[in-house]
Length: 227
Ligand SMILES: NC(=O)CC[C@H](N)C(=O)O
Image 1 (tube, helix red, strand yellow):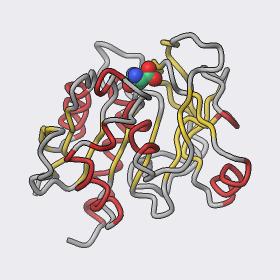
Image 2 (spheres, protein in one colour; image 1 turned 60 degrees about the vertical axis):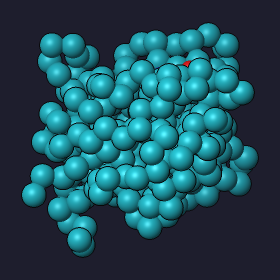
Image 3 (cartoon, rainbow, N blue to C red; image 1 turned 180 degrees about the vertical axis):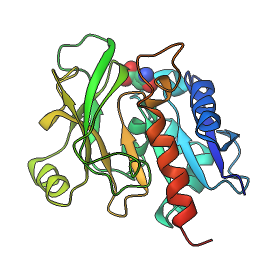
Image 4 (cartoon, rainbow, N blue to C red; image 1 turned 45 degrees about the horizontal axis):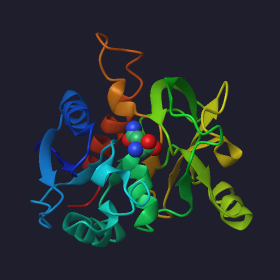
């Protein structure tokens, strides 16, 4: 059976099309989900894409968190549904308290858009099991509010529990504490990542095919998961 991966569209989403494309290239069916519809239509996993949901008003992700679809996603994620939040999606996951900490204004106050090397540190998650521990990948980063912050105790806990999923290598583009680019929840089914793996899945557009591993990981995870 082909896995069905939902991709949510909020008003202001920008990367939902690319996320759905990445899902298809990885070999799954992409199911488009609408922010106003709480029904997840039986999907096996969910991607919250990048962009500017609700115009980034108030704070990035602060309004999207209250979308009808998020109520269902929060419940399902607590029950083990794999959820990947990319950039604005990561911001939404923090606002929804599925992940600890917050994404704040880039330290230098500039929007940053460049190709970025990441080191994958946690390969036990639903979205990173196709990587080798310590593997370096190249994916685009593009954000204005990507500076990950949390109190020292939370950061120590994330590190101690192996929940720092990826770190920036070769320069930190936004001032994130401890160079954190991606984290996971305790169960490893929810991952938030600031850079954009869905933009690194095709040779034509580059900068690598490294992003595909996030999407093939969840398919591997679903095959191993009980129905
Ligand atoms: N690429 C994105 O998803 C951008 C997220 C958010 N709007 C920011 O600027 O930080």
